[in-house]
Image (cartoon, rainbow, N blue to C red; front, side):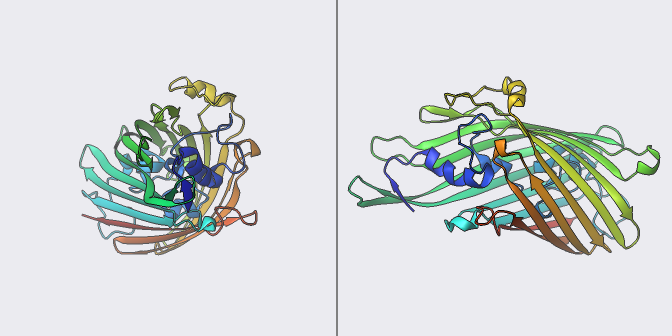
Length: 365
C-alpha cells in the first residue's frame, strides 16, 4: 500500500472501520471510537456462535467476554479424568487473517494464560495484537521513502472469584497502545496509549426448579477509560456494555445443546463537530445513540469430543448495518481443544466475507 508522508490515523481507521461499522461516517454520532480491534471476538468458539459469550465464559477467554467467568474456573470442565476440584492452568491462543477482502495482510492474534488459586479465585493475563499491514511513504513527487508497519495491542490482567456458589464477580485492567505511524522529519509519531477497566458479573442459579444448572446470566462493562490522543486529536475508547444469557436445552451422557443470546451497546457519543463525551459522562450520553448489537448462537457437543456451532449477528443501520451468519466446529482430545469459526456474510463483497478464525485451548493440573 502507498501513502503520502503525512499518513493519518483516519486513513488507517477507514480500513478497519469498514469491517466494524460499515458505511457510516467514522465520526458520526453512532460511533467513532478508536482502537476498534478491542471489539473483535477473539476465540473461534464464540465466533462460531454468532459472537456470543457473555453468559458462557467458561474458559480462559472469559478475560474478554466476562471476567467474572474466571471465578467458576476452579475445576476441569472439559471431559477431564479428574472428578474432584483441582488447581489448574489454562492457555488459549487464537489467530485470524483479518478483512481478507482487502488483501492487505492484516491479521489478529490473541493469547491468554489463566491460573486458578485454590480458595481465592482465578487470575489471567492476556495479550491482543492487531497487525495493520505494511505501509510505504512517498513524497509529493511520488518517490518512495521508507516503509513501516502499523499495529495496535493491548495487555491486560484480570481476576474473577465466586461470591456464592451461584454468583461470581470479576474485573480487569488493560494497557492499550496504538502505533499508526512513526515519526518522520518534523512530523511527530502518530501513536497513542491509554488504560481501561473491565467489570463483570455472572449468575448461574441453582435453585430455580427446572432451570437449575441450565441458565446463566452475564454482565460486562468493557473498555472504560480515558481517550487516546494522537498528536493533537483525542478519540474515545470503545466502551461497551454487554448483557448475555445462556440456556442448556438438553444434556445427557452423550449430548449437550445450548443457546446463547448477547446484547451489546457501544457507549460512545459524538457531536456534529467530531467531539466526544469523556468517561463517565459517556456512560449516560451513549444511550442517546439509537440501536444496539444483537447476537444469538447455538452449540452442540457430542460426547464432549465433537462440536458444531452456528450463530447470527445483527445491528441497526444507524450503527453500520452489519449482518452475518457464523459457522463453527470444534474437537477435543484430552487437554486440547481446537476450534474453527467462519463468517458467512449476507452482502456480496463485504469486507468480513470469508473471515476465518482458529483458536486452541490447553489445560492441565
